[in-house]
Length: 324
Image (cartoon, rainbow, N blue to C red; front, side, top):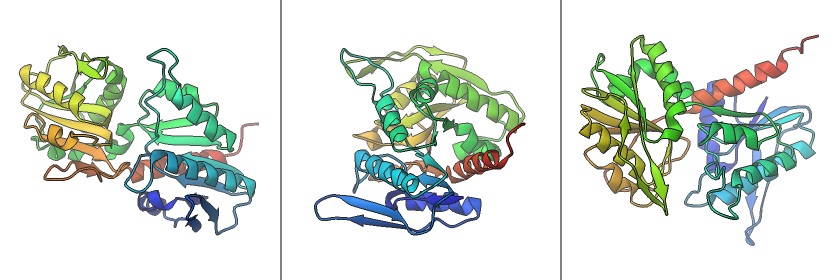
């Protein structure tokens, strides 16, 4: 197994490699004055099972498009030089939210991104909490794996009440801030119930979006006296999370915290998420919180061990002899 990572994701990838007990494979990366770039592996790759880790969020130095282009070129290079299999590991997958047409002549950008990965010879792709799991899996013709928040938090479930600032036996409710995330919240709730050995409630919020404006205040589920954990795939501006937190408190919740796989924190997110209605916010480290300034800081949990476990399972499955 060889694990490669462009410079923009090397810190995250190093944590994944450390969890697997091996170093990152050496990679030369050059940027030219005209804006072009190149990467090449500095180790033989012929016959190797290669994994390339690159989180595809925009950043202060490279846009999501820059990172996507570099990742595609590196995958193609590895295939050109004889890698037996190349798996793209994109902890945050850009354009995953654009999985359906909402206006006339809209693009299906997720499908186009999938076609780009397939065109350069990607054998598999792995991400964390795809925005819409069915759309993600259907966009790709190669195996597509989306890890869940349960894969990340499951081993640390016993720590969750303390992470939320709640008593160990405090009643908990896992809630989705919109109907589209109900399955995500349900899967996490089942994981936490199994790990904590006690009942955890469920709820979800109504949500409507028109012209970029989010409305809807109907809460389904009993949150009275409970610490509510709002679960989403990502936090962008924070408006959806805050709207749901207020609805939960109005319905009698004792406290509300947020949990998201990815923290984008665009626009006035820091001010929005500093509102007193939200006790805490937990995000993974798939996207560094470089856009945040001031006092607001989320609690960050590492997703590296979850990705290491997924890579280990994929490698073991590949090494297992095929059934006769």
